[in-house]
Image (cartoon, rainbow, N blue to C red; front, side):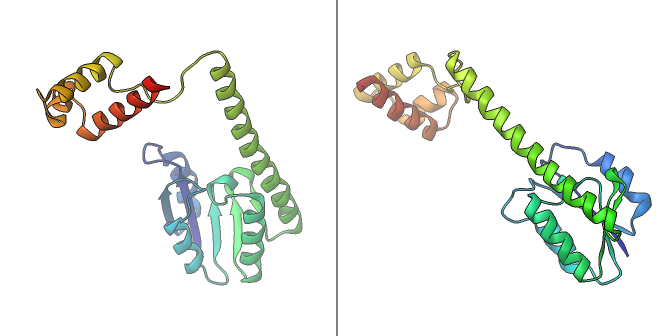
Length: 188
């Protein structure tokens, strides 16, 4: 059987491009919606466990199935030893052939390099933004003025945390965290 495995990193991403490419080539398709670096990939694990000698695992692209170069090479070697074929559609690569196996090793290394370079550029961009004074992260849900007002109301006993949180449209835990953070930053 020809088994297609496709993955998108988030629920919001659309797998249609992969589905369209793999459907005509595969007897069955398995779709996973989570990051390749997730600790567990239940669909991938089930696909790998269900493959039998003579089957072929088909993926759209190398990074859709494997976490790293080492993972890609070890998994491909494991599949080959079990008599299971492996094809990467976007690369027109069949690892059953020596040239395909060689090209696969090179492509696995290139894919890992690309992932690491993206990560490096992202970190460098964030560091540059911080140096320019950009504040990273989500905006606070409460302003300093709101936190001061809540602190005054709570200290005087005029309102409860729940009432103040409702007044500002936040959860009481959000108010508690803001009070604690504002208290620690006000004293430093």
